[in-house]
Image (tube, helix red, strand yellow):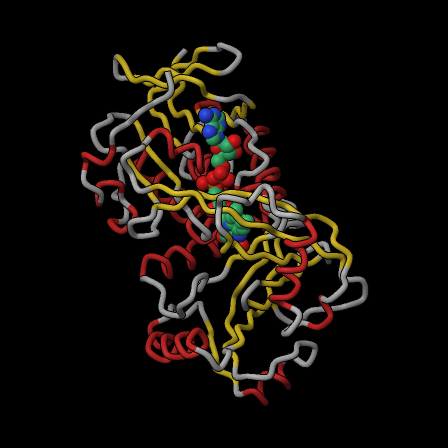
Length: 373
Ligand SMILES: Cc1cc2nc3c(=O)[nH]c(=O)nc-3n(C[C@H](O)[C@H](O)[C@H](O)COP(=O)(O)OP(=O)(O)OC[C@H]3O[C@@H](n4cnc5c(N)ncnc54)[C@H](O)[C@@H]3O)c2cc1C
């Protein structure tokens, strides 16, 4: 039997794509999603944040602002439709230190904020305003505050989406694809238990699994760590985006993360060292974080397209019926729902895809497809 659409990878990219395909009218039983359940995939992070300005500038590219608006609205809609134990919104505070980084944030905000979409509200606070507005934080400098932002427990979101899709008839299978090849207008996939599958269209939503398939693309991995803290009676009036970011989860636990660590030693760093580094980065702004019990320390890896740091969403040049959705970098929540929506309407209704994230922005010779065989 030939599956009309097979998605390889059931992380944020693959799962939101399946959900958006069904919303757009795909018959759920025509969808098959295969996933190897990599525990270090970005989508297993126990605490993540969605906000419009990840990175070191307050002047994001238009494609990022558009994707944020679309993804936030979609996730908010899902939080009303399915159990919402994974979703919490709050204002974000970004302290502006008196150094190059702080000056850059302030300057880029000054230049760009009048062009933000109306859904994003932002304000520059004097040190005094910042202290009064957020008395539980220790803010000694000016700060930016913006809305909306959300804290997301991605594994719970994925579980809810998958349960609802499975109830509707979509199939999710835990397995590793060990061979892929295209022939006779179809894609043929072999799994690690030697099952053979055939699909009319194949979407590669494999996170870091994309790297070996496209060795000539500038795809890279970046690793990082996330702590989950038990705050006891401490409360947070806002999410905080500083050298690390701290935010409450819906269940009351706090997430503390930073993804800017080198890849080479990510799985060898000592737990105590990681914990100290993350807590040291946030306690100047949130003294209550010092000494909190660590509920979990998670390490993971994400894929990024190094040339322009934008995702890849669309048909793989030169390969009929083969599509990619990935290289979401540190902005998985910002990009995945929006790009999954675009790819769904492209696959089902032949709608155009955004140029900024279209695979054809990269010269075809870089798209050498080297599948496992
Ligand atoms: C430490 C850290 C912190 C982060 N914090 C944030 C944050 O605060 N906000 C945010 O928006 N983003 C954050 N991210 C990024 C975000 O997690 C990722 O961008 C996103 O989860 C990537 O989703 P994906 O589905 O593309 O890839 P993945 O999550 O990697 O999923 C890919 C899936 O494909 C499967 N797969 C791969 N190869 C095969 C194969 N051969 N056969 C079958 N299945 C296969 C894997 O098992 C995996 O399940 C963070 C990432 C890290 C590492």
